Length: 150
Image (cartoon, rainbow, N blue to C red; front, side, top):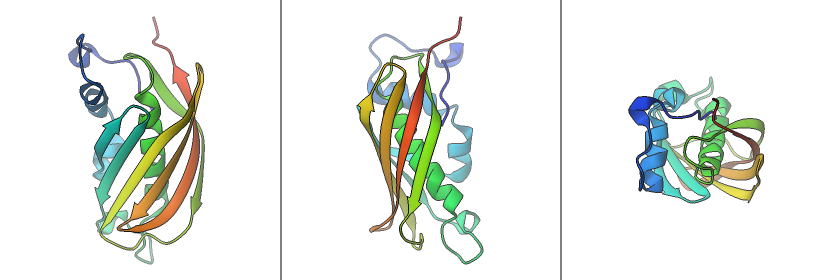
């Protein structure tokens, strides 16, 4: 997860809602778009995202690829942290530990991420990844706060 300062075209306007601010940052999340993920819930310190599973998301036995599952866990943990930093400030993942509980077999992955503790330099986050109605992975992540350059 990487979120940098806004470009001139995506600069904040005073009074932007949290959802507007986060959705503006999504335009630069190219890998998220490549896998077909979308944020479905945005709240301070909490994010949810979904991806409809397709053939390109599968590993050799037909399960959702572990890299996709970890990406979804990272995505929601990182954006949960982003909701708690000032606009123009970003976060990057410095540690991600993912535990796979069950294979991802189904139609849709849903990931839920939240901030356990927000600090000045580090945010400690957790996330869960569900395949349809089954919990398939849990993750813990440490996000570093990246101050604007310049």
